[in-house]
Amino acid sequence: MRIDIITLFPDFFKNSFSYSIFQRAIKNKIIDIKIHDLRKFTNNKQKSVDDYQYGGGAGMVICIEPIYNCIQKLKSERHYEEIIYLTPDGERLKQSICNKISTFNNIILLCGHYKGIDQRARDTLITKEISIGDYVLSGGEIPALVITDSIMRIIPGAISDETSALTDSFQDNLIAPPVYTRPSNFLNLCVPNVLLSGNKKLIDKWRENKSIENTKKRRPDLI
Image (cartoon, rainbow, N blue to C red; front, side):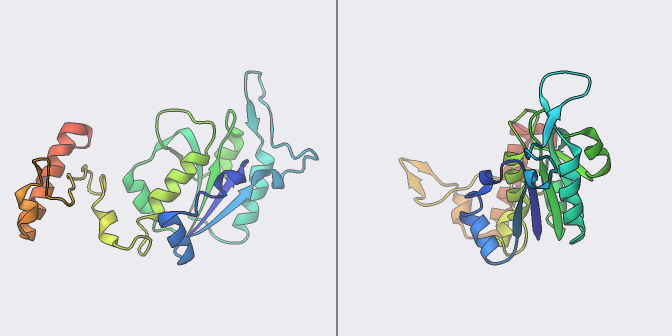
């Protein structure tokens, strides 16, 4: 899978993909991440990509021209299943969206900044708009990392045990069950006996019941 990230701050991503699952997935050619500096696609001599908004008001707006130039160049080289703009008023990110995007071959992530991008770019170039929550960040770079991580880790081969990602919270619209490891007894805090039984059927049933119990308690909206 290839992910093209368009940003005003390419250095933000300089070391972000050099660790853990990111590093392994890139090294094994499971995912290919390309960072594009939006300032390289403007015809403005000062390399400025923003301007005052029509009608007045506080805050600058990213111009349509560099966005158009960058996206058109990328589209001339390959087909993209989605061109995603990261914005607080987009569709709320959830696991089902990540699952679907992870099956694509190529996507573009456009990081917003300032007051956002010219609406004409949203109307004519963007195919999907995503928000990672009901709050505002300085730009779309952190959401781009969140989305890249959330879709990359469920691509086959990205993590050593593929079944691990399939049992994460939200994969089946439930919160994950509690997990334990050694020692089995720590200061008289004991691991549930069923997990030590070796009976896979009972363990699976226990985990299912605990997932339902946790979801009802913590996220009843998912039930």
